[in-house]
Amino acid sequence: MMQLTKTDLLERALAMNEALTLGSVRQHELTDAADLANALLLEEISERKQAEEALHRAQALLTNRAGQLEGLVAERTTELSATNKQLEAFVYSIAHDLRAPLRAMQGYASLLVQEASAALSETGRQHAARISKSAQFMDALLIDLLAFSRISQQHVELTPVNLQTVVESVLSRLHEDIQKKNALVDSSGPWPVVLAHEATLAQVLFNLLSNALKFTTPDVPPKVRLRAEEQSEFIRVWVEDNGPGIAADHQGQIFRLFTRLEGGKHEGTGIGLAIVQKGVERMGGRVGVESIPGQGSRLWFELRPSR
Amino acid sequence: MNERQTILLVDDSDDDLVLMRDAFKQAQCSHPIQEVHNGEEAIAYLNGEGMYNDRSRFPLPIVMLLDLNMPKKNGYEVLTWVRAQPDLKRLAVFILTASLRNEDVERAFYLGATSYLAKPSNLETLAAMMRCLCNWIQINHFPALNEAGWK
Image 1 (tube, each protein chain N blue to C red):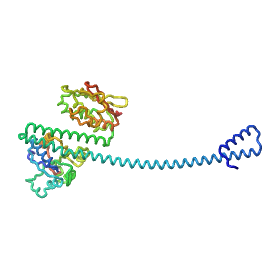
Image 2 (cartoon, one colour):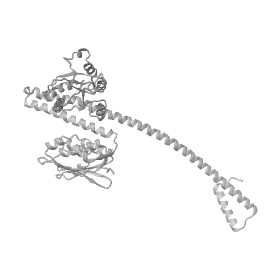
Image 3 (cartoon, chains in turn green, purple):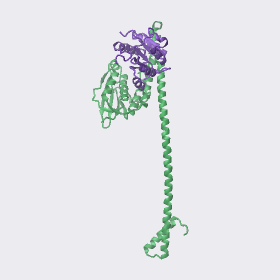
Image 4 (tube, rainbow over the protein chains, first blue to last red):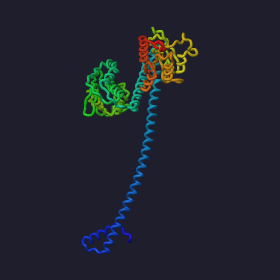
């Protein structure tokens, strides 16, 4: 049989079909029809075979690529976690090693005032005091950096944590500060149990409360309210103060690392709220702020309840 | 009654040793202070090796303040060694280090530290800490350094 294209075959099959329907078929035409059908079938089979082969090849290629990709991902993950570990060790040792000379600076400045006080003028004593104060501020920065690096890297496992216990321990750690500032702290509860990493949660609450005590309105005794609000899927913890408040266009920035809104007025390191956000995120929650300047700030974070 | 007993400082930083001496002075602690500069010296002192054999000059301490990060045997090695000595195993060992790492706290207590103190950046705070230490020495009941009294 001469080589026919698939379209030719189809056309002829259709013509044959018509002839068959009309009943005007002769013997040789029937043979032709059978040959045609066979040819069509063979054509179809060969096409299917080719398609199947192409599919197999594609599948093999895909499996191969997937394997390569998996290997690549595993390799990169290993590299990344090694880099992370190195970075952690780097940040740790920098912060750690920087603290030793700072201790000496602060200590000797103190000794200078104590032991050579008579030889120093009033200005000299003030200079020594400034050295000491700056060294202490840098130490606060380093401690916060250490905490930020730790909270970003450490293994965080969530367990049921009683908020009341954490609130009480944070309040007792800040007891001296609260008394010194003459602050009124309301934390009467009730406090639910949340899913959290206890040390991280304590650090988050500590930073929020110490912020509320730090950023206050002059001549107004600080009032802080801590409370938990049960929502459908989350527990929202509020830390509300009567401080100066935060302007709307600054509210988006406060959780960013090294953001200090008050210039040099307050002794913030600009790391405290970044630690809060990072800590809450590591526990699968969110943070936020509501504030009207002059009417205090209300900072919140959400964690899942323990049921 | 414990006031005249020696406190042994183990620290490789001369600056920190100067500040610690001053902190003890500010805290009005009357304990004699002895200093060594690394883990090997600490072990030699406690073991009474060489010049440390003279216990009238270098008495066994009532408390050892032990830095962790030191050359020639670090604080962990000293602590491990102390707890393995039958005649020293109950010595009060206070870790005094710059490290704020929780792993270090856990490891120190695992190895038998009596207490863990982090070096503050502020001399006044260090003095307050040393005042607490001296008060603790006064109110604490110290056992014999070996366990003979119990066995």
